[in-house]
Image 1 (spheres, helix red, strand yellow):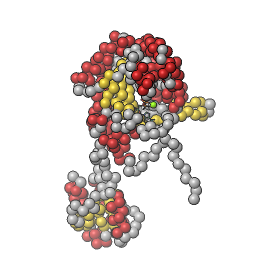
Image 2 (cartoon, rainbow, N blue to C red):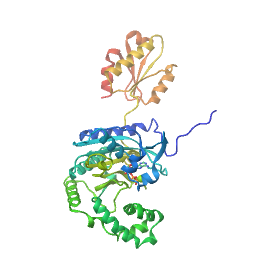
Image 3 (cartoon, protein in one colour):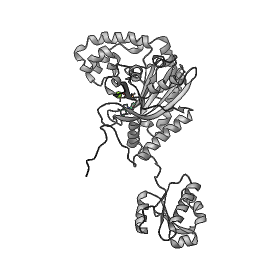
Image 4 (cartoon, protein in one colour):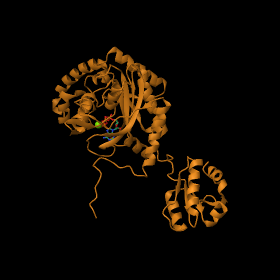
Length: 424
Ligand code: ATP
Ligand code: MG
């Protein structure tokens, strides 16, 4: 036998028994976004490497070490590690956000070269949402309300909590960065290699180090909120007051800065303790400078992305009773002269009349015993049986495979009414 070829490390297949849950989660996301009037956009999975260097930032984990980059025809290309840069690129390129507000969303695979573990993969999936052209805190609040509604629909709302912060504008961060670096210079002895490197490239990222000893020292570090400008402060107060009025609980976490360079003012994360180390299911923030940074007319933006693998894991963990669609509702079995054509006709008629039903027709021959085995295996509730005498009488046997109702023989004219009743 030939040697088999395996999937690439950190890149997962989704089995036919897993897809119903994925489809359900994706369906809840799409329904929620639709109920807020958002529009889907789609963009390529590969972009110019320069887009991410400029859009995500040179000193971020993503650009420093996580990108899948290759050269083709002397052009450096990268599998997208996140969706915002590509969304902004497309929006500028096609004028979607020129002098107009937009509420957009996307869903699809992202690629990061990370060490694979539970909740962290090299190909993973995000659903992301971006609002363009609105500077008010109302937009930030709307995004948080939208996510809170989604958690309810997914049945995970009791297991996620909201972390919120304001990181101010560029000027605030420049001043704060200086103060933080000055403070950390006095604690060089406790900094690990990663933090020492970040001290010069991206010192604010040190705030979310997982190193406990450094975290304790950081408790005495200068506080970002003491540096906030009036505009960022009042923006944050408005956001908090809307969330308060709407009954959304949050914790202000002054150490939350998020990994990407492009954020300003609001940043937030929805976190869970139910998934171990990979606890952030959704992260976002405001990025008023990004559109201009990527060459567009200065346009405010605010958005977030959620990791679908982590959401699916969380639903499995805390909401095991979610009702998923059966792959097959009705299985058509038949045997004998003239029954093949009758079965095709019956199955097609059902699919036209009852499009919500999943009708599978047996196709691989064999006697009734074998066919009923297939019917059981399909998970169908009802088997419709056609033998020669049924075809002759224009009738059909309706058999409840779960054994809840006795088998009956009815006229084929009544089959649609009967199935409507059975699946009501
Ligand atoms: P983390 O701190 O977990 O590395 P991040 O800050 O890099 O997350 P973002 O870039 O903000 O993550 O992406 C938004 C969401 O996408 C994350 O909150 C997470 O749910 C998901 N995500 C990010 N990286 C991965 C990955 N490698 N595998 C699975 N999901 C991921
Ligand atoms: Mg990361």
